[in-house]
Image (cartoon, rainbow, N blue to C red; front, side, top):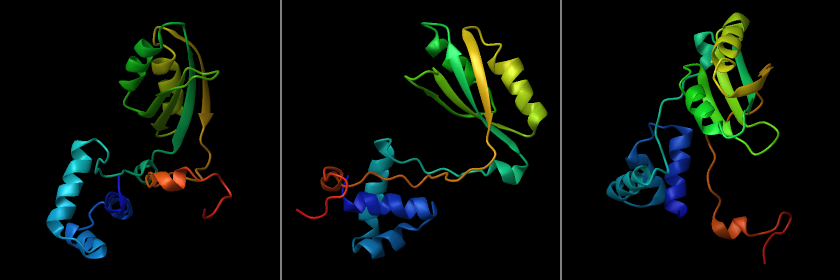
Amino acid sequence: MDDLDRLILSALQQDGRTPFTHMAKQAGVSETTIRSRYRHLVDQGIVHTVGIVDPAALDFRAPAIVTVIVEPGMVDQVATAVAEIPEVSYLVMTLGSRDLIVEVLCRDLAHLTRVSTEKIQMIPGVRTTETLVIARSYKLSYRWSPVPEAAADVPAGMVGG
């Protein structure tokens, strides 16, 4: 990952439709170079260019985080079943007091209740759940980018060398 790759990632995160010609001009390289680098980033699974849908704009007003405690040895089976639920937008296994963290996007409280009680809680191996309704989002970022390795090695608060 070099500066040109980071420039491509940054441009796409600002606007996924940024023309390669614009990136090339900004970087001082050819459009072919940008196109080749982009193709390499995609082939390596580093970048996926997708359309982002805003659930609130579609009247999904009850997003929530559901934490799940699973019977020992059943995390993968439960996670596979949870991942099949259409309302699930994010699913991770954790090593803390909860086994799974699930984000669900629901239209309203009744919809959220059905997803929690009739879908997630009914999966074999689910021991307990806790549902945390999201009242306000302060940050949702698709703009994460790796920092250059040299900067990552500098201890916090240290500048220069």
